[in-house]
Amino acid sequence: MNEGGFTVEADAGVSATPTTLTAIRAALSGPAELITGLTLRESIQLKLGTGQPLKPLLPTYTLPEPLPAASSAVVLRGDPSVEVVTVLPTRLSADRRTLTASTAHLSIFSVITNAVEPAIAGFLGTHGERPACDGRPPNWVDDAVFITPDGDPPLLVCTGSDTRNRDLLVVKLTNNRGTGIAVTASARWRWQWTGAAGGIKSTVSDRLSNVSDPAADRTLYVMPGQQLHLGFSSPARNPTTITMQGAVSTSALGYGIAWQAADEIEARKPYLRTMLAGAFTAVCLVDVIADPLRRAGNADLLPIISALAKCGVSNYDDISTAARAAIPPADWPAISPGLKSGMSAILRRLNAYLTLASVFWAGAEAVADLAQDPYARRVSIFTKTPSPDLTMHPGRLGALRVGMTGLQAIKTGYVVKAPTDAICGIRYELAPQVRRLFGDDGRGTEFRDRHNPDDLDTIWIKSRRPRTPEGAGSVAPSSS
Image (cartoon, rainbow, N blue to C red):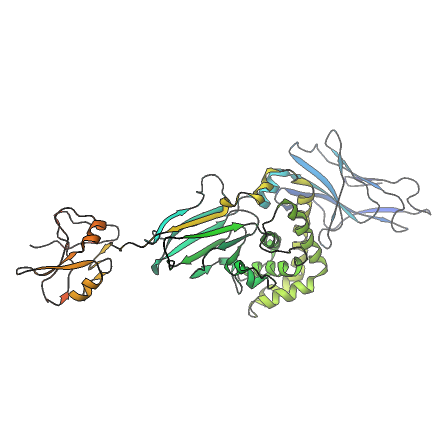
């Protein structure tokens, strides 16, 4: 029997009575790209008049041209839009044109061809852009250590300061891989922003109520290609080290896969897709993930994808309920009308990932990225005791401000009162320990009050070579 590129062979004894074997082209048929690099060539539905066969049948598919050496192919059983597919053991002929499988259960059969490297790269590979930070880190930061963007690191990082408060350190991270990651900070942040991965709930303990690990309150999920911004204040004790450790945990792996599968969900708010993926994670992975913060390995890929696909088929109502509870009521109308039909698209993608995990990426180098050295996803901030801020601005030098009284100026620790100059008024010179940090040119640095002996009205730098560090603006010359 022939249908399209399919041929089905049946031995005597497949049925106890005479019957008819029919084959019709399935509604979902190719060629169509399910995900990057993974193509559905053709689908047929096989039916036997007497029900299921008593002996296996041999579906065979002939490709129009030989399969390229860098590609693979497999026969699937099941409708990828409504059920979890079964990957059948498939034999490729020596001329790379004929695929043969065996099945004792009749359903929809599909041929999937795969360009291995693009498919794996599309799923696990580069997904993000390098973040941009403002200014320099505050002066309590001694050093920031992370992998530079040379090559293709899994985490793209920059450090700077908060434009609203320059004493706050800002660390921006981009997840540069196709899996979700969980980022755990060793210290509590002052503020955090997770963009489209944010929404109502932020930390792992917020999203998965069964987590008891204290680190879960300092752990945030970051989806593929998304950014995480964290603001930190100076620690109570210096020097110390603040770390941010990213990891492909089991829950983050499942969360990221669900997030990628929900790519076709239309939503007016950027975080609805992420919240839906979070509902998938909370409902579908409770039996798979014993420890949500445990680092995932290659062996976790298949069971997690399989659990998500099976759950998407059988637990739609629970997923919908969890999503509705997490999403603001005002936003629910934007996603609910297309959720049911969108689930078919999600399931198709999950089945594509399932096929990829089952067959195509076995032994591929890209999979090793899951178990990559933790330092590849680590940011270490080394702190120090803050030194005085000696940046000059108009009317200001560090903590010293125009309008201070002489006593207030001295209390800053930046200056000392010098002998009175009858011509120029009261003089305030840099304290010796500050002068050493500021750098002395041998002519001294002087602050004067020419108008009121009790107020420091103008900050002047007494030097033939006025110094104007970054951000200083103009510095008034001395007149004496």
